[in-house]
Length: 504
Length: 103
Image (tube, rainbow over the protein chains, first blue to last red):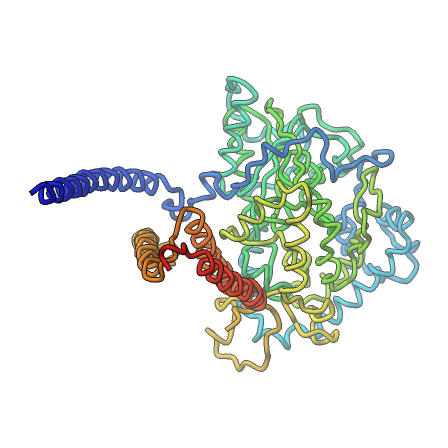
């Protein structure tokens, strides 16, 4: 009898537990469903076409723990000098192109360059003239051979050309006239005061995201990065910097990932350029509507400033071995534009995510560079206008541009494609990008680089060249299916692909 | 599993989560059958090993999915081999530490 009672008490207790537990589980489930539903309802991924980007969620990396007063990759190692007009490659090649149209034929002697400012550059770097001269030879060879490969690259070239047409549209318009007037062209009324520079910065960054940019930063205009004797719309400009040029809003967007990975032939910069240029125009117009000056700077060559170091000062990223900006989210796969403004803004501080150490140990870009233009030194081995960095030969890089299998012989992008930081925002890469900058021991970096060097396939540097120069049209990745002409066009596939693939 | 699918993707993850309940419920039955005398730290080791297996497979296939074929297979081969060995050692330890009263 006593045993039976005990059994009944135990069963009742278990039943009660299950009953209460069931109610509790149901309650939790309802709460979880409500919570999950709410989160999904707010998920920026739901805003098709304006998803993560518009919400600023492309810029997922929290930079605040990494803010420093001086950017490690902008180490001052000498007298700081402002860049000359001729320091910008596209200024030089543009001027030489005009001279060639007038009948000038380049010779081995740089002193015969008709343009005085270009000549001045090569008087400083006479050893680079051979590379530039070679680029003319390579371009001629490119033009002789490129049409033989149209069947293979037709879709990639069409993709690139479409964005190129967009890039060369008239928005924003090229500045014509004095900056004291042109920079205020969008101002139609009295300026509206912001509550504070902090409020202004917050809003402007949100607008950069809403105009389609993935990463944005703000910095004071540092004269060290303003070209001398350069002002669009003003052929005779001196060294002066307009007084209303106070702050620079720098922003950028990646090139489309899969074409980039298939550089050279299937890749283009024009997609990133087009979007960044449009955002610059939109932001300048937006500032004008509120009564403030806006002078957009956009790629390929519409600049009065050197944008990447200003992006570094604005905390967007750091300088990589290949000399360009490397951001935590996009690696070096970022195309920059900027707007100079007189609006009082709260500037960002630079960041230290240990990129310099990463680049010192990695060297993948230097080993892959088809023109050998990137230094393979263990430590930064050059001082450029006062700043210590890795040596980079822009003229030999340009030589590769002129022979690469793009339709217009513009761009290479191999160093960007192979960089271990040029990775999409999936969970493994996001995990790595969050972990490595926080690991002060460097063990994560060493482990990752060991895997990177041993597990990943990198074509030889020579393989990226066109077939007419002994290459195989290799890419870091094989092209995506939508760029393979044999999938869509009536062409006969006579080629094999060289590059990483899905592994099946 | 179903990128850009606003319905299938959350359902998949919920289903996968529910499946883990079954996995551990089943593991518990096996442990009882073999009288392993499981406790919190033994379950932690088993759970950690199982999570490592899932993450290694998922990571490797993420690499395959983004066209890093060679890296994906290498990662699966190296870490996968290590995890199989670690799993065998863990099983041996669990058997060796069986409570004597139960054996």
